[in-house]
Length: 102
Image (cartoon, rainbow, N blue to C red):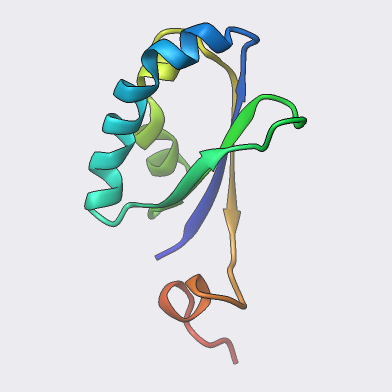
C-alpha cells in the first residue's frame, strides 16, 4: 500500500491546540489502531508549528480524507495541509510498505 506524508501547518494558537489535543490524539488514534496511521507527531520546538503524519492509503485523496474530521482541522487550528506520496526504501517501514523494484 502506498504511504503518504501529510503535513499540517498550525496556527499560532498554541492554547487552542493544548485544549483540543486529547480529542485530536483520540481521533488519530483510531486510525493508528486500524494500521492506517503509521506514525504522527508535531515538529520539534524551534521549528515552525506543525506536524507530520504518515498514512497508508490507496490515493492522496484517501489520505487527506483521514484528516478531514481531525478536531485540529475542524476547529481551524490547521492553516495548511499538504499530501505527498512517499516511498520508504530503508528503515523499519521499507520492508513492510514497499515491494522490491526490478
